[in-house]
Amino acid sequence: MFDEALLEKLCTASGISGDEDSVRDIILEEIRPYAHNITVDPLGSIIAFKKGRKRPSKELMLSAHMDEVGFIVTYINDDGTLKFESVGGINDTAAFAKQVLIGKEKIPGVVCCKPLHLLKADEKGKNPPLKSLSIDIGAANRSEAEKYVHIGDSIIFDSIYENKDGRIISKAIDDRFGCLTLIEMLRSDLPYDMHFVFCVQEEVGLRGAAAAAYTVAPDCAIVIEATTAADIPGADGAKKVCCVGSGAVVSFMDRSTIYDKEYYNTAMRIASEKNIPVQTKTMIAGGNDAGIIHRSRSGVRTIAVSVPCRYLHASESLISVSDAEAVINLVKHLAEEILSN
Image 1 (tube, one colour):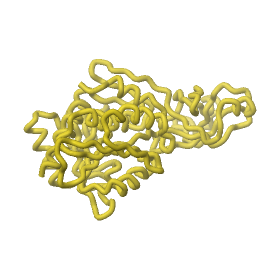
Image 2 (cartoon, rainbow, N blue to C red):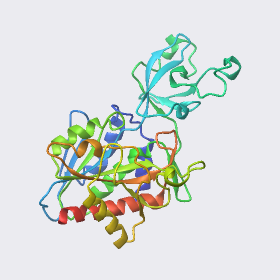
Image 3 (cartoon, rainbow, N blue to C red):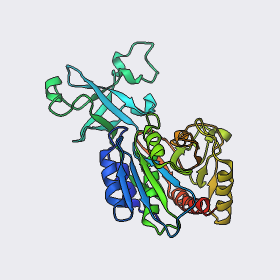
């Protein structure tokens, strides 16, 4: 069983793209006793190296991103409400009427919009666009609001963390679960030397991974992620993409990467041999830091292993404990297999 208390700590921390300090501090505290070398690059990504029992013939980089989607304060209205923009890909409907926390002090607020009785005829029955929404922190006017919040403050969803019968519900499972996986590996007795990268700014364009991959200069990489599970009412067949409870997700292709076919086949073989539940995506969708890592320098052989996650980029997402365990188990075996050949 993985360290669920640490997963909760990571998921509930505040860390939208470009403001990952709180998450980085948690990770650094956890990995310092285990890593042989740790650096934080100018963008803020953590690059850690741990020696294993053997020195491999190639350099392996395991990668997960620290940042989560969220919002940023762009203006304070005269009435004390806040205008904001999204940071990362958030559907407008995921923001409406949600509780949020603002800035380092985590000032509570609620996303609000025009009340029903003031809607025009052509606005009724439609989801309000993000640009029409505001955040109410209870301030009487701009002057009062400015005592608590500032333009440029980060905004995260104010969400619960709960494990109910093997189903974990939380914000930011994408990709704090990936960060947990890397920490679990750093804590373990590694068969080979490995590099571990906790990237910043994945949600706004894979920016941290681009710089980190250039620094590490790996020959091969494993990206650990959370990926969209659409096994919900209204989605049938291939449109489910992947399913919660059906095991780790090994991708062969997404919108930014065609994954190394040999590594894909190796992962599937390991899963079969080790009796690890595994599945693949049934749609070519999404993307992750692999999209920039595999193109770094002269090219990097890359594979992604993900936990299936419902309601990705929303205020609460959902994963299965059994899927999480499958991912961690598969990644450990896959890393050893890649470096042994």
